[in-house]
Image (cartoon, rainbow, N blue to C red):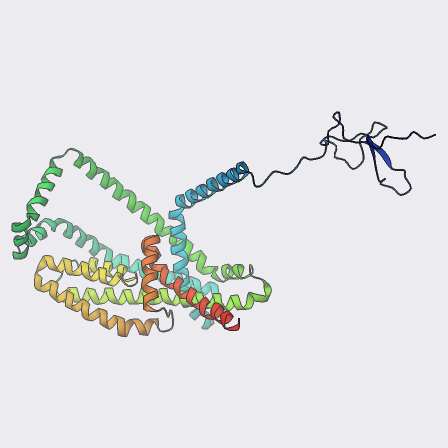
Length: 403
């Protein structure tokens, strides 16, 4: 006679194999809680149960402790990521500059490729030409620039003295005591013992800045060569991240964006170069000293969109003011006329095939980029705005029309 079990204390489980009798197992009791493995009447763990007991209930995701823990971990990770980006800001800046230069030189490389040269030979020719241009410029201009810069620093007291003798400066001094207050502050700082240490620290800082600048320049050149040589491969690797069904369209849009950005960079450099050369000729004719240094600064500032040329003009006018009011007025009139010629004749011809950005959008992009990343942000803001406008025109608007 088979032993009958109490239905309140036992239960049955289906066997794993057909034809086997169901195993009789004990129900949960105080001696065997639900979280522990169940034992059959033969004293063996029930098949199918975990070796170390059944898992407990899942964590309550609505618990304040759970939410607070995850929020704290996320905040710490975000803070650490921001810290890493801040520590790598200089490296990221160099990489962006090199990529920007590589995209700017890519149109020249493509032109040489259309003439029958391979990509490698085209990149080599362009890079050697760039190095040769900058090397020749450095060999010819930099010695004169160093001499003129030294002379400018040495003659600064005389220039300031000449400026203080003008009538309108004397009137300001008589009314507000501008010169007297500045002289008092200079005497106080000269008599302070910490001034010598600050000057010494400034000299060391200037030396470190020069070495850092040379290292950064070398790094940018190497990265530019690498990006220029592998620009097609980098772009193709990015296109492969897009689904195959959309890859053709994304490739066409990406190539057009690279083309427009490259044309913009080349065009902006050409406009700034013309500005620097014309400024050098003007300063040589009217007798503004340190023409080479000032023309170089005007050319560099001219690369900055919208405000760069104006900043260079103001600098030249201020230096001309040290000579005489008449020279400053002549320089100011020249820049007023030149900027009109540049805006309506030079820039449209050079930029006609590159970037078409409305004036308001260009202004907002330049100021926004400058506020975020300084000069670098102002440089790359307009081509980025042009790329966004292209995507809006070719992707967003057609989808809205079809909706």
